[in-house]
Image (tube, rainbow, N blue to C red):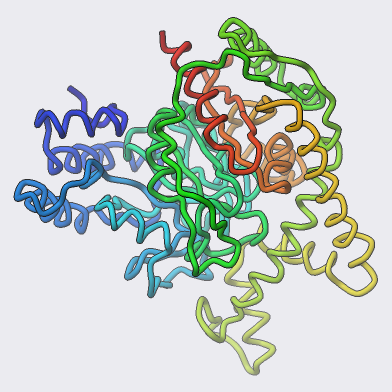
Length: 479
């Protein structure tokens, strides 16, 4: 039995049957990290020594009956923009190279309450700005399926860690597709919950009205289990939704008979790779065979969602990253003569090119004379995007699209062309603009054997519908 290839629900079952122990699970994953990390480069900071100590303590408490929780001792990876107390949290930036978080994010408190064990902080695009995990200050993560290709971004480290079996599951953040796109590229399941369902307290902000913590897992059942753990109202987050707590594992019915699925033709246009289209067409036919009602619709938001997203995201990034000034915390240049020098040199040296590009763009669209022309107009378009989605959900239960227009591209292939890189998010950004839930699941491979992802979008706080639709497809594909 190869422990690291098991899903979390399989690990739980084997723990309950006393076929394996908590220590064996954690040792297996730590050994896997030693074996694969040099090739994949998925982690910035490893916490494996602390993990081993914690696994021994938890195992003793489980054996003595002091802890009675099916998730106790299960390891996990955490994206390096989520604060863990007394652990380095760098956002993959020189700016926060030596920042040690003084508190836990709410999601970390929830994981700790269930006695999960963090094996390390995963690599990402700097401050979550990128689609390939190539803008990290520390390293370029590689796709475990093909090490010459990117894992996607910005949560590429988390996706690669799960895909290479270095952790059974991981947390990431999704601002415009940063969970779903790398999940698609690496062939794992990526869930971006409804905005407000999971607390953002302790998530270092990129764009506050778009950011959402979500999950990377090996299958949909694990996604439901982890969503149960991290979701819920939080008084520390003013955008947290105070809704009734749900058990998302109960929605997995393996039945989509009568489910109404909308397929927007605009998401299958010229920019979508032919092999991706073909895989999606096969998936659509599979849903029809399973009893779902699938209809093509027009959803023209695809034509202006990307521009809207980058205006709003960059504006909010410009505001959020203003705090990193070389004075309060973060990197400070050693060579300065006055206050203005500290600001200029610390930010010039501390931020990478992509972050600077977005700060400049965000500052521009917020500046006097351009605010009305760009930022205000983008906010109006945002309302139109939400309204368009609302109209679709009056008639349909789920919207089905590709997750990404292509499969994983080669390392360095798009690094010199920011606009082409931004187009990687064309299928995902509208979900964040509207605050909707979305999930990416594998639906095939291309001629290079690279994974292809299918995105299912649901209505606000209707994670159950997309989880069941994803689970049903996954079960039919596995049989």
